[in-house]
Image (cartoon, rainbow, N blue to C red; front, top):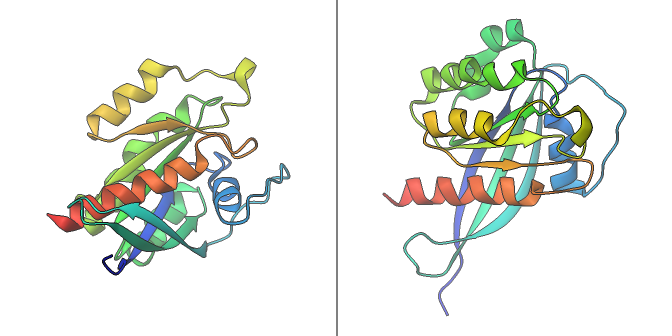
Length: 181
């Protein structure tokens, strides 16, 4: 049996304030949910290791993921984008399915990242699907945006845990595939 390959990666969560970036990270790292909204001030960094299949088909890769959570205010994006996005190898682009504008704003977030990093893998997360009655973003909406960036998307809920692990895992797989090229 081959030794487990290892990779260290930096990923950034981007999106407007209150879309659930911090809640998604808390669910992924600690398997917890807290519905009290606490605005992220600056950036918060978390770490977790996950295992993805090697794109070469030669076993698995241990991905040591450093996860950067940024406050969602536009002014902050401009102010600290260099420091925040520098060295990122993947993006989790998060929108809130109950607020249509949060999907459109992702174009600017992604452009800001790509200006610093060049083209890197993106995984879209349409978050808060547990709020079915308030949902205003539909399948066509998220698919259109994800297709523009040639990226996958998932419907997520930090509250129920739906697709949270799959979102981070999917991004890890995309990063491993890109690094194998």
